[in-house]
Image 1 (spheres, rainbow, N blue to C red):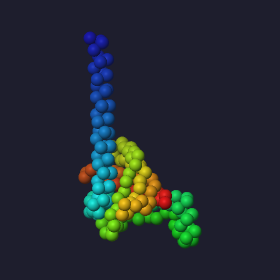
Image 2: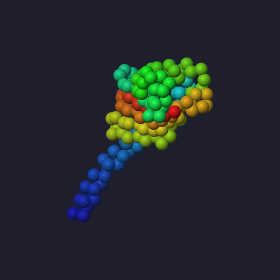
Image 3: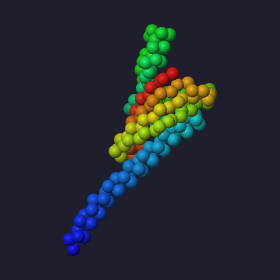
Image 4: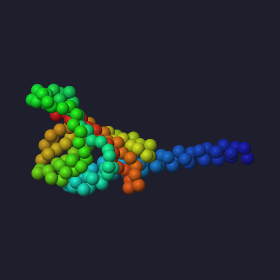
Length: 160
């Protein structure tokens, strides 16, 4: 009877680890879906579809220029700022009313989550009318809500 007890104990301990892995995999898949929906909404110029991906109130949106881009901007205009706060609402409005096609392409998407909060990090190219207008790295902070994963904060670099 004794040899069976360690097997039963091992099986009991392994089950929660498998369940945690399954939940983590499901969370990463759900977050990847948010990433895909974000890209699809931009191409479709659908500001409303973008809006549902964000926490309705609060949150943060900030872009910052890399050293070379900031130096060039300062040379053109001494009052140029390195960091530019904004909101997802302004971005959704820009996308919805863009005169030309817009798209954001993501590369090397990395997701980390504990099931309650998550971070997404990737490199991007932003295109207007098929031409790259800026590129850089972008990070999102997400939170699990009753309505699924929502973006709470966004920070990205602009490397021209």
